[in-house]
Amino acid sequence: MIILGVAVCLVVLLGVGFHSTRKVRGDAGNFLLAGRSLGAPVLAVLLMSQVVDSNATLGSADLAAGFGFWAGAAMPLGMAVALLLVGLFFAKRLRATGVVTLPEYFAQRFGRGTEITASALTVASFGILLAGNLVALGYLLEHFVHIDYTVAVLVVVPFVVAYTMAGGMFASVYTGIVQFAVMAVGIVSLLVWVAFGAGFSHPDGSGFTDFGQLTDPMQGAAINWATIVALGLGNLVAIDLMQRVFSARSPRAAQRACFSAATGILLLCVPLSFVALAAVSIVGDGATDAPILYVLLGQYTPQWLSILVLSGLVTASLTTVSGILLSTATVLVRNVFRVGGEHAAMSSDVMKATRWAMLPMAALGALVALRVPQTGILLTLTFDLLLASLVVPFVLGLFWTRGDGVAVAVAAVAGIGVRVVFFVLTPTIYGVDNTLLHVPNTLVGAGADGWTTFLAAIVSLVAYVGVALVRRPTPTAPTPTAPAPTAPTPVRGAVPEPAPVGV
Image (cartoon, rainbow, N blue to C red):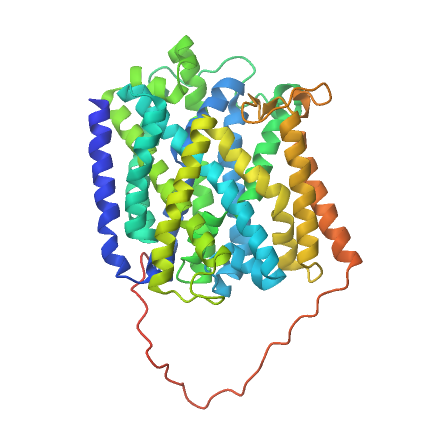
């Protein structure tokens, strides 16, 4: 009964996604950025839908159940911090540039070489993020439909690729609105059910007021703070987040959406850590069989509540996967291969190429999902790598005139080099066994976990600043000026902008 209800919701979602093709109308601008027509309320919902997907939600719940409240809350807190920072310092400035992808900013500021570097790092990192959502969906089908995990992952991929290829950004918009409505009602209902049922109990030392989780490294403080910092700063160069910001109808709308989304994430997602802690006492030993939230929803909650929450999780993951596929494919087409030329217009060729580029990205995500069946850890690892490589050049490049492509290259190589070396040598990743790539050694133990996130970021900062200070400032090209026309000049072939989505 539960899976039937979720299936009905999924059919509705796919129908909404395919319906969005009518809004594209063969225009690449509509396909990639929804015609830059999104109002603040709609954009805020779209930004929040990225965070309440099954990858982040299941990962947060499992971390809270295993390591305490603050281990689970660190993930939504980090995402909220990221959106707050984007709203305060970056949204209006970047939206006003008129760029389509984040690597285009790197191209304008540092040159073509840095554009390629930024494209490669962001696409590779987001392949990991894509995998995390596929893992969560695979576990759901395995737990509730009893099909093999590998088969489940391979079944999910064609569905999300199909409606993303059809509707582009409009598919993310329409499905995101449906998903968020379902998920918000589901989370509130789940909180009420736990509050008036088992109550918000928790194991000793793992509650909200047990601040040793934030102050004592032996209780995971370094890992918890590393999670907040990696997500809070690494998301500043998240290509899917920025592509949605670029879809805003104005710089002001982009800023307002970020503030609203940060608030919504804190209100909806942080309380799920209370649910996860309560679930430990509710499900008992069943917590070891599958993600704890799936066990709770599959065996203990009323069916209507299980259908509601699981439907929200499934649709949230599909919406997130859709956004990742679109943003990574756009980067490959516009910034790596330059389809349409160096200054590619929003042509039909760009749209067709973007659709085809989604296929290898989907294959990469599936491969990682089959190799590393983790949820929240893959989310954090994605932004950890971006923090070590691109965040420093991105931030300082916007607010400091010193620094060039060489400084970016040195910072990225140094930061990512340090992070990868410690990743290979450290036996755990954010408290979970390193099953991806670990070389047994006696040099680095589990105690380094978390600290290496800060070390890599500091190395990247020192490298960028050091090279920028040594090298001469790059001359800034003068901005051409022209006399103001006495009357508006008509633009030949101009077409009206699409009607705004939202208010």
